[in-house]
Length: 460
Image 1 (cartoon, rainbow, N blue to C red):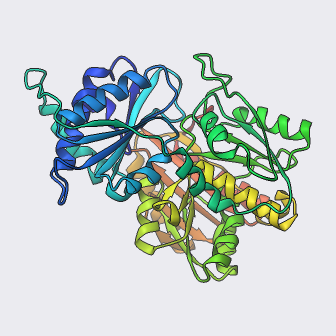
Image 2 (spheres, rainbow, N blue to C red):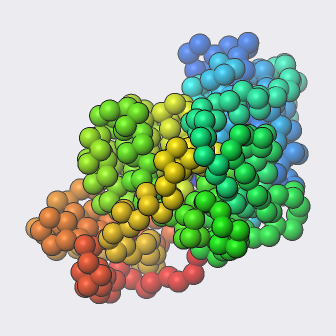
């Protein structure tokens, strides 16, 4: 059962089967055992717990807390919050770690947990989740220790608000923002952080906590951005924002309602952070447009390319002490936020830039929207390794080859294109991302690659 709920970066599954309160308690106890084995962690150590807006979240958070306390850790319960509050609260309380009870952007029937260690360092499969799963598998109901750790609730919203608004700065000109909270944690963020900010007007939709969501809380799906786009256009707003369910991701639109690609936003914001931190590093994942790398270099920064996945981005950000990072999935990372992601900070930075410059957001984004991109295309393929090996053989001479995450061929200088092919860890699927200097070049590249990758999968 546990093997069904432990994923690469978190615990996530359908509630109540296979993931329920019994497993939640076992996972809590196992997490405490894993943390207690860390140097400097003792019975006096704290762990921060928070939860999202889902119907199953209160019960699943309570079960986890009972397990953590049974394992001897003292719990600080923040209640219903966005996931990113963890990355502020764990260092604030000098905690041994933190757990958010959430299923992020998944449908309402899902629930799960996201884990952090001390300093809000993410815990993924290779950095602790495998060990937590192994410990949980050994726990039986018969060995049910009583809770010895203490329990307290805490409200850190005032401090969290000040932390986020530091990234925004003062607003000399009024900025009007249209926000879709996706019936999720963005609702509390808007109320606690973005309300009553001088020169900021926020109009929001889908703020009710209800079992009937207006749409799936995943802004990466184009149709879920339509309410934001329509709202921006109808009301003449300066920008639009759509949060995912646990509000650690935020997709933006410009003032025309056009959705901003995450790599283009990374490129646009890179200059802002490098200006504040001359020569600083900027991290982005290997699916990002060449425009991101070009923007970083042009601003005098250091470009660092990462494997896909928030654990990889955060680690590279820390290892290079980079100031900012962006991922195509909508996660944006900040050195001064425990090197972690925050949808709220992403929105705050964009609002601040618009207000101080007096320019429209599109004027920052459009210069980077210059190369045709394929987007991520999935293919059903039974021989993933064989296909990638054949591509490597045939394309190795055409450009630079690297295997940071799957196979990447960078023929930008020679032939005006690059592509990356990655294999899914869990399915017979290959994922293709490609970009070229011209539409004709991209079409020719896709025509050559697609027949070799398997059956193209359509839909979300």
